[in-house]
Image (cartoon, rainbow, N blue to C red):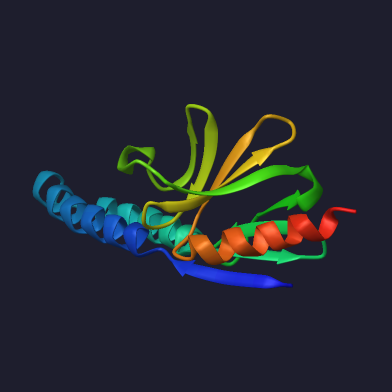
Length: 147
């Protein structure tokens, strides 16, 4: 059962817009130089382009996820996963790619995620606005691997 879902990064957009507006005001007031403002806006635009969405796919015995247009893709064989559960992150865990105590988080918006406990002992959390659908698709894939 293939699965594909893309979550928009509304939190990332809001953060970039807020930082952009506040930064523009501060940069203009302090330096009065448009070059500083332009450089800052280019960096923020780059961050938004990379992290504007998070897509998760399950197909061919693996789960993959990537931000934005997919400059880099993370892949994990379903046979590497020990268990799957729906979790809720703390706001302080942040957004983007974050190492938190005990797990690595990939997230663009919201606090909901699916936690993958790997056979290696590592834990990955994939943020999503469809946690139950993603968990069900992963569990279906795991059951299909069992003899």
